[in-house]
Length: 105
Image (tube, rainbow, N blue to C red; front, side, top):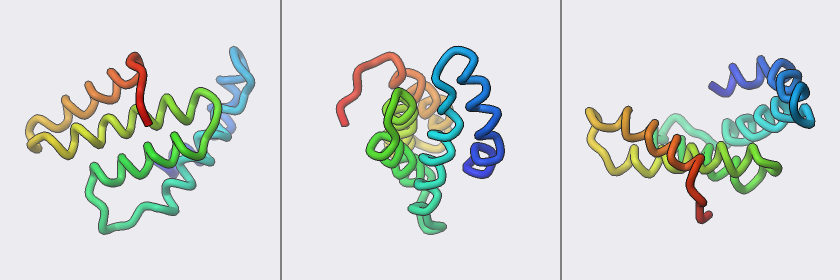
């Protein structure tokens, strides 16, 4: 995912520029890159999602950091609490819900 964001940061900024300030790809690449530096092969799925979410919330400004950070942190919480069979749907539902509910960080 990090490689895909890095490879498409110019395109993401161009799309954002059509309706916004054009920095979305830059901010995503920065945030995902910082998170990538903090990830280790020893981390489980939920811990990696939490690291990504925490990095985005704490280090990336604008709307992108808190929005995407809350999304990934919510996914991490559900991923830790659910069994494997329930995890996929619950993780995605939690991420989506985080986008419409106020978050405490």
